[in-house]
Image (cartoon, rainbow, N blue to C red; front, side):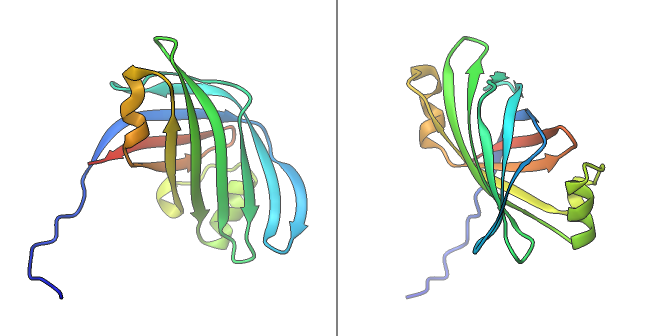
Length: 158
């Protein structure tokens, strides 16, 4: 039964900006799902009032560029907070846009972030009591790709 109750859309709160340094892609070739590639994460910075520290080197983003042009992204990496706590991140998402925009991105050219779709849904894992709230909150990442970085504005869904 449908009720006439008002709809209460979720709101969000900005948590931090992640500036993730990346290497050029390692191309793995094509399979039935699309073009497979890997992008190594080499470090970076996390800046925010509730979460700040560094992105540790050693993670990566496993990507499939589907036949429809959508980049299906699956990244795993670690953060280390300014207080020394470690946080594992699993971040999945999609990036897509007009073909010419995506080709410019792949060549490393500057592209306005509003000209393509790039959203992620990060999940966090930690043993730190100070950051346990990360493990029980839904997050959305609004992302942007530059030549050498992925910038992710992290929002907690309230």
